[in-house]
Amino acid sequence: MKPNLGMTRRHFVTQTGCAAAAGVALSGFPALNVRGAGEKIALGFIGVGGRGSYHLREFAEMNDVHIVAASDPDQRKLDRVKAAFPQVQLYQDFRRVLERRDLDAVVISTPDHWHAIPAILACQAGKDVYVEKPLGHNIREGRAMVQAARRYERVVQLGTQQRSGPHWIEAVDLIRSGGLGQVSLVRAWNCWDLRSMHADMGKPADQPAPDGLDYDLWLGPAPLRPFNPRHFDFYFYYFWDYSGGMLSAWGVHLFDIVTWAMGPAIQSVTTTGGKFVFPDARETPDSAAVLFECPNYVWTYEVRHGNGNPPWGGMDHGLEFYGTQASLWINRNGYTLCPENDRAHPKQVPSQGMEIQHKRNFLDCVRSRQRPNSDVELGHLGSIPGHLGNIAYRVGRRIAWDGTLETIPNDAEAQALLGRTYRAPWTLPRVEA
Picture 1 (cartoon, one colour):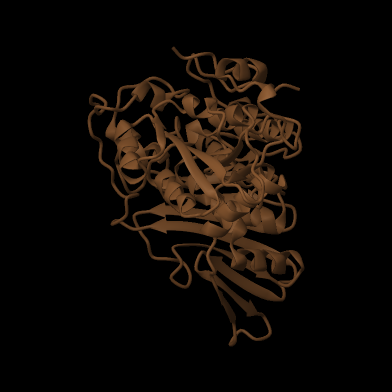
Picture 2 (cartoon, rainbow, N blue to C red; picture 1 turned 90 degrees about the vertical axis):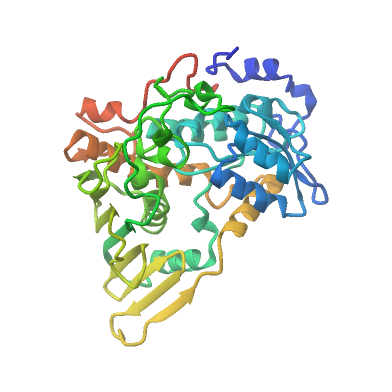
């Protein structure tokens, strides 16, 4: 039986047995078993596919972490966890993880349409959250997640791990301090070739769900439809019911850097593109270009599948910032700074990593109750450009953006895409005032 997930925090606590009497957190809400400096942080995992299993392995190697529980609708994925970590308690239903009173935090690595509901319920259950990007399936979900984190005073870290990478921090500090002069143009891109998983996925027929998969639970709030292998696992990214393609799912890493360095100043968005290369099952474009209109600079983003020839320096993803005093090129391998008055001698700074640093920042904040590097509010602002780019593509016209009210003025069709309709009995949990 699936309870109504629009329940209040009190109802959830009653249902799961996580009574306030179990303990009072530093924040005044029930953070179960907040650890001291010498105690291990107890983690649960919601979603243990590719990214989720990667997170589980990395957290498990940290000597101040105890992996307690994991959930996934796909029993085959749980079996792989069991083989590697036999001590971990496994569930298909993520709500069983949230019921546990011995967890400090959860790591959510589900498809995008399953980010918001478990994250909000985790906050209501007194658990901190590490959640994969983008923050929500849509902009309204992202704002609801911010509200939940603030209302229940939870640490919520988005998986935009570049926020914890030393060379990213150094480059953003340089831009924000005026080291490039007046930045007038920012360019971002992603490109994949015909050999990648992002290439032609074909059009396989619908078929029965695999044995061991709770497909109804996997769909959750998404519309009911027959199982298809190209809607599942990695390929979910390319269908509007579950995600927004690489424009929002990978582009968020780049958009987050721009909003960090330049501020969240979008006024309008125009997207052009389409399925020009692959006549396959995907709904999202295989080629697209986005123009973000900002007050004092031009910002563009390009995504393409089918040609991996990078626009600059062998970078299949990256950012360019062009200022009056210098130019800066950056991706996950490092950055290059080229002064305008000495272009023959650019400065190159290599990456020093980011994944472990990001996880460590989250764990440190679970203990200290400080906001993490990719705090939920920052993650929300960094996720908005990708959602807006997709909305402009879907309605086929320029859209205006009111960042203060988080609305698309005078455009009911575009405004409706700021949220979505949930399949019963699922709904976005209500955050108490």
